[in-house]
Length: 195
Image (cartoon, rainbow, N blue to C red):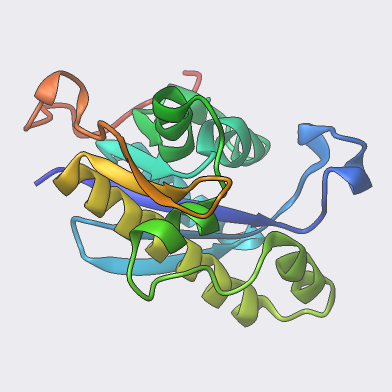
């Protein structure tokens, strides 16, 4: 079994608050799902040191808009380069297939039965300012659950669904397979730290 990790992050601030500077975005919570252990976990900003070994040992990181947002923000805290770890960005694959970017909630609503996002990133920032870390963790884990279910559906069916401008639910092809249909990974740790 591949040691794949589905993940999502929430931030303490918005792009507008940091003048669109990734370096100034701060993590509030990172949530993950591990296929190897079939468990969800969440890490607050002060617990990120516990997250790095999990990510480094993963065969692949799976996220939604993770190459453009999550990994660059996490790189603010990591000594290596998380973008060098094997990863799959579902949004990138969707854009390759359809030519457009879709919201996670829209793809989930069209594809999955009764599995949706529970809030949005702006609500998570409000919770951060109110000190409601447990609420952020619940929300972030739900986003991870939605991402995981979309990945599982796409991996099994080689397609997802979306609603077009007139509300029709339409399928589109996706390929979430491991590169070169690799079934087993020999490498057990992904080192990106500068030694």
